[in-house]
Image 1: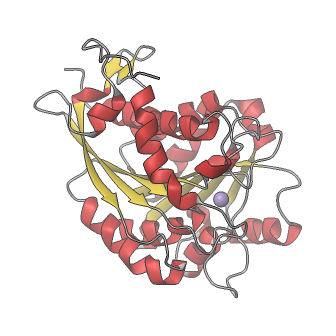
Image 2: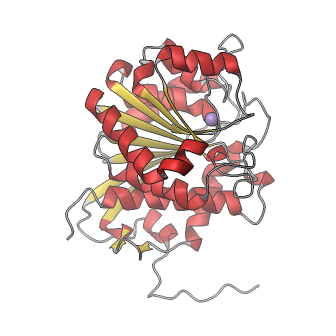
Image 3: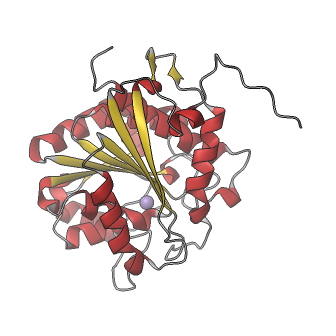
Length: 308
Ligand SMILES: [Mn+2]
């Protein structure tokens, strides 16, 4: 099929990623690809996700019609992908932490594209060495508290963070589902002081209220907030490319709203987007859902600055 001629009136988000922004920009969004593949409980090709997300931005505009803003008010600095696609999580961890540490000072916020969920522990350690002063908000169907005996996987990033000094009272997990977790780990979450918000509670209270109150409560106790967006929090129908999604999960509009609220909060420093294996996608549904969350987060970041 012959590609259509570019429409100069239609601002592609992929061009924004490549440097097409208004000058001077009001803020800076950092982007870092971490294509970690090995060490997942279900083997897959999450290493393909960063490139797939970037490519998917060509299908979106930078104009947020609903909120009346253009992402081109902020600039993006894309740091490319770390060479970790053949590394085990333990070996990749120092490079991931260092790259986040290096990218953050110049940026108002950073999006880290996984890779599987094993990137969350090293990336959050890179956000700040003082985990006791940090908050973690996860959007995930799972508690991610599995045992550490077999090393770092995509099933235990929260457990590893607790081990390394993150207080459980600084963790809020949103979107947790039935028949996707074990009682031992739910008990551990409760003993550790983790706040668990089930998918049923999200439905009852609404995603905006749940995420806003979680951020407000974390911000009272911490200086920096890390957001882990595991795309398996979506319903299986919307996220076939994640190993962990099941029927009964959240809808894309709920996760987009969550990403926007997180992007708007001044203490949110990093958002990771993990667990997408593009080789298992159907009609690009999962990759496009993830890309839409990147844009929603960027739209939230835009709203941190006064209207120009
Ligand atoms: Mn997870």
